[in-house]
Image 1 (cartoon, rainbow, N blue to C red):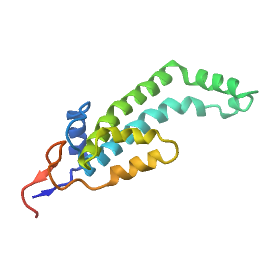
Image 2 (cartoon, rainbow, N blue to C red):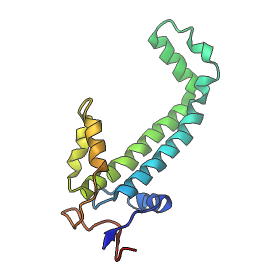
Image 3 (cartoon, rainbow, N blue to C red):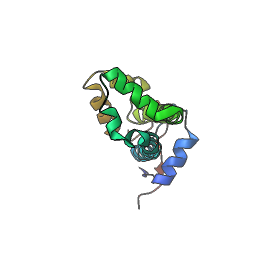
Length: 153
């Protein structure tokens, strides 16, 4: 018995099937393919939403202070782009927090370890290292080994 890796499409399906669930475990391949999918979606939404900022780069050079600069930037973005970026931000949180908790479960740690990311400077690096760790090779308190296959080759 061994833990098989999942592909990009399968990881996306698994991610949507357990979108808001923090129970259970998620393998490294499932987590990192899902993360790549979220990054791609983010770029596909962010680039068009921010394009009004780059249409007239000299418009921002005339700002007298940071407050005026921010006012010009938000005016250039408009309501549609601001709403799109806000909804993207909500989607990213809803998509990444549960699978991060499941990934921590797969390494034998509780979901509370997610909060280590809020520690300034080192917390994000620490969480990144925890997400890179291999799966526990046996059933743990969070469930069965994910993506278990019967035989090797």
